[in-house]
Length: 82
Image (cartoon, rainbow, N blue to C red; front, side):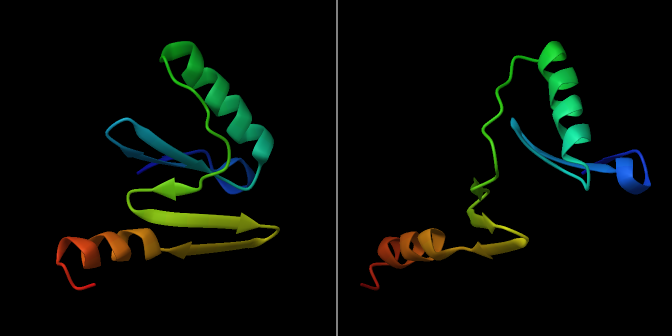
């Protein structure tokens, strides 16, 4: 986890291997940061977060929900509990 800026210009960047999550209160700052990173690294933007490290993320309006239903189903199948 990395932190850049403060207050309204705060960005939090979570990094796991080659996956990034960028969040902050100002979408313009997020776009600017992504542009800077794309100049330095070969990367693509995938839009709003929908899946990360086994977490399913659903963003609608001001609400964000997180679940692990797909991961739980996979574990159940692997353990032959079905």
